[in-house]
Length: 402
Image 1 (cartoon, rainbow, N blue to C red):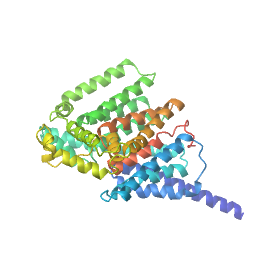
Image 2 (cartoon, rainbow, N blue to C red; image 1 turned 180 degrees about the vertical axis):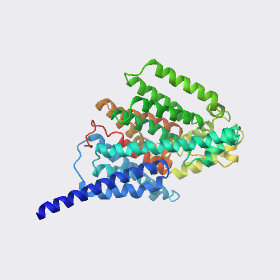
Image 3 (cartoon, helix red, strand yellow; image 1 turned 45 degrees about the vertical axis):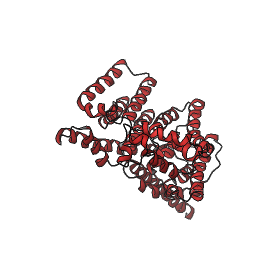
Image 4 (cartoon, rainbow, N blue to C red; image 1 turned 90 degrees about the horizontal axis):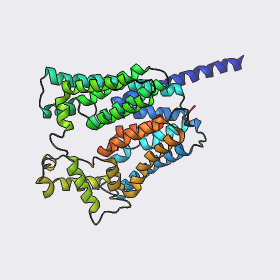
């Protein structure tokens, strides 16, 4: 009798723990959309709850990915230890390279838990999109903001998170809708509607790269789906054309580089660092701070101050490399760049070897964003990159999941 009572109590405790873990996953999805800093305690709690579940993992891809993330954090740590001017803050904001992979190492996520996260992330991001779209539409039609500069200022001052990360979350939301469709949790009309809303939102805020990538992802999904008819392609084209005519003045000014493309000046400055005699191709500057300092000097140099992008130095815009690959190469040389590229190589291998479509989508989203942004210069970018590198591999083809 005592054994039966103990069994029931243990089962009840386990059910409470399972419920709480699902709540934490919902909380994490909320933080990824609105406030990344509050996700850390939730992730650490999940890790602590599962420390006793450390298991043997035979999957080579998983082991290599874990090793790569730990190695990236190691070179960050070494640079902070060896270079006096390197800010210690880089270690704090980069902790996701440590405890997120460890969480996936100790915890075996089941399909129900993954669905909880994917569902909640998609819902929170759609709420976020509606909020940001309201701000833009209000600014255009009610506040009568017509100039390109005033609308850009609206995006910078009123958005909850910076535009690159809002756009990145939009792309991840499309992938989440695809996941739910594959799991038969939403129908094709659902994924069609969600994708079009996201594409139009990216058009409205003039996130040109993300808008292009969102269309590519959507077209790939359409091509993969055999039930799609030509009318779906026509509908997509008509909606985009109507949206450009309706909201497009601000978007077109940004897409067509009304004020030019400052990345030209930025990347020229990056090239000057790489071409300098003291640059070490093997380890780079071994300091992100040294790279930033040299970029600032270049922004205030005569070639930039007398060129079309004179305002970068004049207005003290301390732009980073605006390219994650260049950042790794200039900051940590071939070693750093190789580690970063290895994550994409593993995902591509997983796509071809195991036919995991989500690995392809991961590469498409994060590789494209890395070409034009330093997505890992913020805690949110690091968390999204590491977390989704695991969560998108949660289909049955990937052996670490139930």
